[in-house]
Image 1 (cartoon, rainbow, N blue to C red):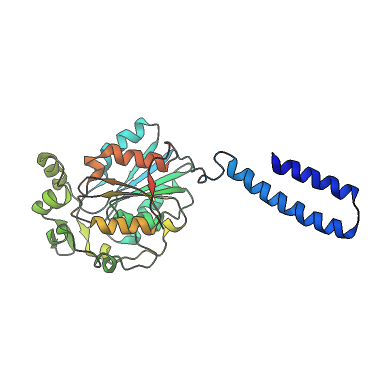
Image 2 (cartoon, rainbow, N blue to C red; image 1 turned 180 degrees about the vertical axis):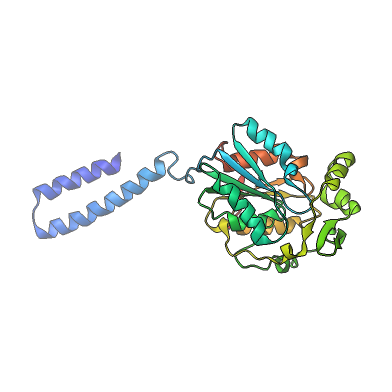
Length: 289
């Protein structure tokens, strides 16, 4: 290379001309040439300017949100298992945030290496908090909450238009659930009605106390993060999803789906998880920071 020849010539000058003035000048010139040459070498070497390689994970832990249970991940689980990954779906107790986080942490502690932690809907709170676990190599948010540490999520959500599903939450004492009408129209709007009714029948009630919890960590500030926005979502405002994805600098996809993209579009969601696990070539866009 040209810069290497230049450095060699300057080194010869140093050897032949021992005067102090020449030594000072040539050393300055040589240092500059070395720095410029090193920079040129890095820029011209394929892959050197690319993002660091993602940690390859063989484990995936999935966490469900409100109005659901672990079986909502069934379509995604089958695809991840077919790709050779070890998959566990957490049964979120939906009682309090600390108890929900603890349930995920117990599962994470059982993993035998790098693990992708995935959350849907409210479970984004759990991913954000439990994602600091040392086994977690990457985070995936599927139409999910993604608060900052200590952030008041309801206050953040209140800066965007309220989604229709909010009006469909009904309480029986301390337990909340979605009405059937809201579930079919606003939660599972792009699923066949018969399938949506089965999901409605098995929805887990949540405790009011669950909604008062705040995260104390924001794992997305230190872990690679991925986000699947549901563009037709009537449960979490799609623009709020985009805001959170952009804020965390997440690698983001947009899926034309209801809140239940993990059921109506499992292929797209699975591909994003595989990407987070280092199992696929990156093809998605990264949200600008």
